[in-house]
Image (cartoon, rainbow, N blue to C red; front, side, top):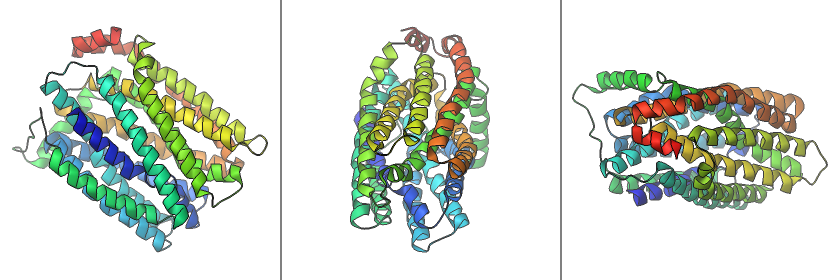
Length: 419
């Protein structure tokens, strides 16, 4: 089950990241301003917020495998729609509609593969720490990001920025076929007898109770809203920012190198995840330390852009460091949430968590884009770094609730937290 999980993570990451080096440039080539491009991207995160719970309930009623296959098929089609919008030189609202459709495909994925893995490991009575397999997933995802982003950037430089989207659609089709062959629900039985709508409403109500209704889970979800929104903004705008620092708007190969460095940093972060967990008694302490460090790194990224020319290597190093920190703290956050959520509502609660992140990004991205239009990218990164501090109060509340809630929900999880 672990090998299947890691193989699917690798294929999925390779497909998704094949356009990461150049995805925002597609919108800028269409003539959109920073504000317009980030408005379209905010529609992508709005789509996440709208579709997360309905698609999450699909995984908790019809099965994790069904949701994953729907994600593969939907994302294949919507990636082609994104390419078509570029070919037709579509306007802002056409990009917004394509972004909403793209989000639908991603929401079928979110929560499904993670819930599938945790259910299977529990069913097979695997008592290894969840951080271990999630950390390995980060390493594999880093390798997939390295290959995908670097390959996509150089394909774009050799052809144009649209070809990587066609390659991504082909890779997603391969992923869907592979998942259909090797991914089967273990430790989870789909419930379809009550009808899909009634069952979805039941799962949603129970997920709200086990997710938003539980303080230890609610606070960490709220904490992710601001931090994730800033992260989305940085991922979207780092490409034109680096090209601006380099003074060459066609240096797509540079973006490939930057994406490769970020991927390598993500791999290192996955390797360091268990070591970082051992430094703290509680999982949320790991997350809080990471948020503080990332805020400082983003502020430094902005200050680099305000300094003298020739600062591209420093900016790339700071971006890579931020990727490493994010990858190192993610396994602790994943294990924290999964230790508190029952199996029957796991995928929907995880989708609820993704909804909170997307909801924050809907507001944060256009706001930071407006700062960039008025004062430049460096100022927007400094503001983004300061915004990270807004997540600290609720993350501290999550940390305070962590021990007592984990003990009530799962005594073994409480013991793991004390370790």
